[in-house]
Length: 630
Ligand SMILES: [Zn+2]
Image (cartoon, rainbow, N blue to C red; front, side):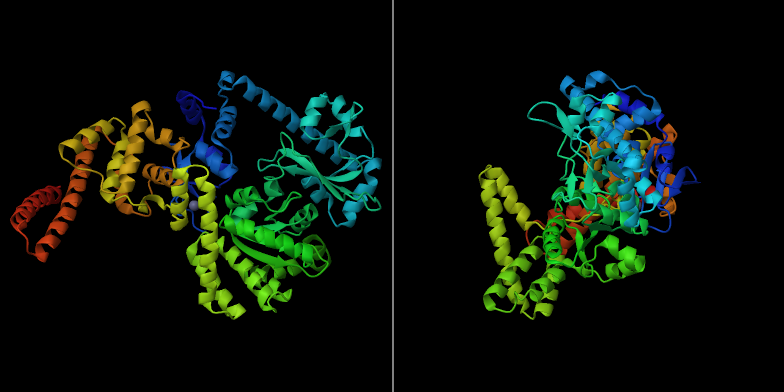
């Protein structure tokens, strides 16, 4: 869905960025900005700046920057339309209904209704827990050591031992059967009619990241011989088991703060650890870890601890999790628990310390795999050893960062007492095999894609951390862009002047940034904000753009004079200066090149070079003189 630009502008104008950011970051005023501790990286001194006039934030520590929309997107993990909706709602700006197609509208309505039904059902089960009917369930939860507070925080409940108790309650609350079906709360009978999906079970509502109930997991009570110990909401309009992460809503701030996430197996483990004060914990909801779940967690941190039972099933689950997480470029460590214990029982019996000790003893994923296979005796016979090694190397091959791959192989060679070269040879084999597979896959989908696949295989994945304007802009370029942003009408001036004086932006970043702003300036009085709200702009560019609008006077005191607002005449002068500076550095560059060529000597073009050399010298001294008299 696309909202018209003027509406986006209106919503942005009526939203107070200091208030929106201030809800999650404690801000204090410094000059024209507000500063606080960055919510996107761990820091002790505040480098996160909010500029209320421009409606922009920028972190000079990690480079994150943007406007009120991107803040909601980045912090609360919303997409752009969601951010627009939330802010429109806050600011009381009505959104046009007609922007939505009827099908979209219908889907949204059905989704909303299903979500409401799910939330009501969870609340109903929670209420029942404290009634006569819920007594055994409550007793069970208490026995597991959950306090009343914990039970309330996680809204644990009891789905009654009945075929239609939930159905009847939902009917009483005015929900229709289609809505209950869409929420996965009821099932249709072949003979007609419906029955409750959750019966006679302790219920664990599952939230999405923004705190809406999207489904539930449910466990049998002790003494129940139902073979399905746990059931989860079926895949539905609101619940997708491949992306859902139990506990993420409660854990997200702590994950961000600790810059690490613990993945445990069960709902009770999440709750038990939470109660024990370990709060950066989530569980996959009844699946093995999926790539989508890892991708979601990666938005919060880069380190992941997989916590598993010591038994064979636990180890196998860990092995699968390792491959999934490494492929997504997570740093993965494995925490093993004493035989027969899960995190929940461990903290209950031995306290938080015991768990933290295990955490501190976590081993690197590759080492874990190597040691596990060794323990299983797979390194004893040559045949199985070869296979085991190949399997370990295949896991190493999944790591996108080549430096990390090499370090792993080095260490592996030491612990396995195998020559490093042998492991490298194996890695090459594995890579060749996977490249072949990739190319084959790609070739069946067309020649261009195949070329891309080959290329991407060669190119090591880049990890560029755009840090403010260190990201490749020269001082002159930055000055020019800042001036342009101060007065959008100056874009035209810059373009004509650049042509007239044959000046260009020198860096790729400068060219790209100016091109973005120029395009936006054609349709918007605020090209910067319109660029920041453009979803096709990369994070790196967004970081550069927002850095241009927020002064970081503390870090570079000289920049204070390039504050954002100028009187018109002095602006032209600043622009001229910046353009001349740009020309000056281009001249210098060219002069150096000519000089180098001249000193090499020989060839008939010397005379021409010499002439160019003199011309450049003349230009430069003119420019130098101009700036020294300023
Ligand atoms: Zn930051």
